Length: 426
Ligand SMILES: *Cc1c(COP(=O)(O)O)cnc(C)c1O
Image 1 (cartoon, helix red, strand yellow):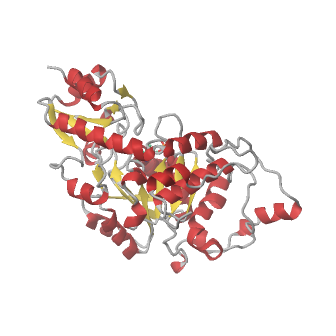
Image 2 (cartoon, protein in one colour; image 1 turned 30 degrees about the vertical axis):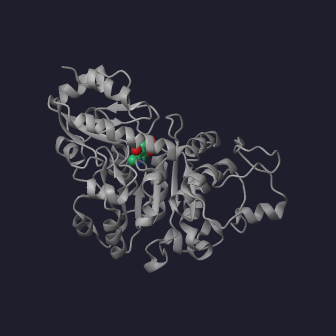
Image 3 (cartoon, rainbow, N blue to C red; image 1 turned 90 degrees about the vertical axis):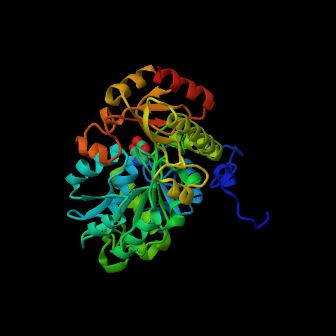
């Protein structure tokens, strides 16, 4: 081997994987087992006491999932990762390590609709309070900081409008406040943006979207950048204080720059239970092998479709950061030079009714609530993913009544444009 560091496409195919030591299988096997035999009683005790790493029970870890974890950690430039059952599970496991009841976290308002729901309602019952900020106004994050703030949460490319967040600017606010920056990198994938390079301390993904990429498996992942010092000021007791469930171990002291990933596994996943099925890990790993090829095609197609829509007389506006005229184009060129992603919105001059009519006339696009599939997808957020918001909040989060969201797939762009053309009609 040369001492060259492998490039992104090489990591996407190989990171974390080796031929199976017993069978020689080259693809990563699906270790479809709940539990693993211990060598002897001492081995069992050391695994349970966190003195040794190894497999115990698939709720806590599994060899197929471990390959996925190592691969995504490598692609994101983190120290370690933890795979879980869904993107939402990743978010709850991350925040459980950081917040005590009564604590706050700051989140950008432009967010996946499900995350707005989770943060507003589900987390309230845990005593975790979300404080909203505006990613177009970095000072709004600063103003939201209080002594109870424990984290800041943003999306790199934000749902549904595909706007680009100034990660470095928000990271500066987080540093000053002494709290970690969590970046949901689902819509960008590490092929387009690596948030850790821009100051993120924790990256989360819905693997369900571009990383898996084929619309067939739910999954989520947490990547630890290894950058944050959890010992400061007793603010993060899950990491800095002795853990009674592990004979008084302090996770930060014992595990250093991957203590956060360990906390997520041994306190979050173990006790909350949202484990990823090894079968889904296998499907997602297979998807990741072609991530660079797919992502480039997604972006190139999205740009062509956005340009077509911007020139169409029935279209009022297109919100795609890859267009030179877009207000996020400067940030897109800085953070995502290979392409501005494949999820974006546009609005129709005919308003709500025109949106509903368009969705019903499209044939190649599937009308459904997902993004990041090989297939092109369409949805009307105001009546679906963002329907729980009032009108003002819909507009603020980029999902006004006249807005249609597209997730552009990897079909031939000419076919996508032809389908939109017939559906927009005369
Ligand atoms: C889908 C999605 C989630 C939630 O992920 P699930 O796998 O559906 O739980 C979170 N954030 C973003 C940006 C998403 O697109």
